[in-house]
Amino acid sequence: MKQRQKGILCILIAAFCFALMNTFVRLSGDLPAVQKSFFRNLVAAGFAGFILIKNKAWYSGRKGNMKYLLCRAVFGTAGILCNFYAVDHLVLADASMLNKMSPFFAIIFSLFLLKEKPNKLQTGAVILAFAGSLLIVKPTGTGMSFLPALIGLAGGMAAGLAYTMVRVLGGRGEKGPFIVFFFSCFSCLVTLPYLIFDYHPMSHMQLLYLLLAGAAAAGGQFSITAAYCFAPAKEISVYDYSQVIFSAVLGFFLFSQMPDVLSILGYVIICAMAVLMYLYNMGKLGHGNVLGRSRRKEV
Image 1 (cartoon, rainbow, N blue to C red):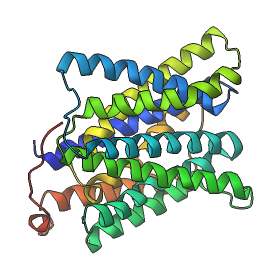
Image 2: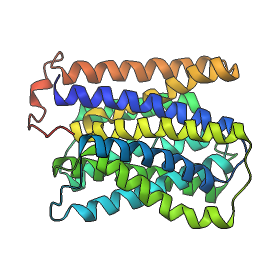
Image 3: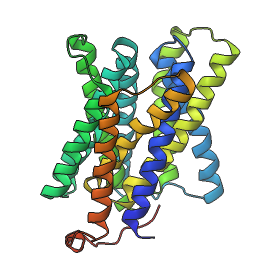
């Protein structure tokens, strides 16, 4: 399997895991965003630590990598906190739409930081996929309050920059498990003081849901870290929108949510763009051979 195909597979797995995470977070009820974030990253840190020891994927020690690790951790933590804040203060669809801006930001940051210039077809596919997700989440616009919406958008931007740092670290030989472990521990340390001073008692079921959310987040974090190490954002970011489809399926079975006509149209557009990008990347459209063939180290 080629590096690009591995990246696509990993980002699809990540999308499903993050859809599960959002489902469990929703089931956990009304708790502070910082508290939810702490448990999310605590479980992820435990999983990462186990894999780190098992695979001996220690810090590479390469000069200059620490600054990128810190950037990934800082912006990743900011992205999570901003997203959870938006979820708590906005209509869920609005918050989800703002968070789906992260692949756009990843492509923009990759252009400036990694010199990965997307071509017209790739750019168009991402834009159309964004339009499809817009049909699904249907932001109300009038229901948005300015500050939470701005914070939600900032979360998407922070996540996009964090994913770009993952690409940089992957190209510099840093292993995925260590990237996830470093980020998860950093996030726990940052949120711990707030948790201590503003802890809200939880039921056993709430705790279970948060632990399951953390496990799903760990799976998503490992998968998306691997995805952006395997392939450039411009080639695989579009597949991140499959999370909307996974969320719709989970919502139907767990919350009896039936998609409307506009949502179904959005699914069709996203799937069509995913198929188009796959055919393009495989060279079926006569352009696949123009993409960069530089080999990247596996994580």
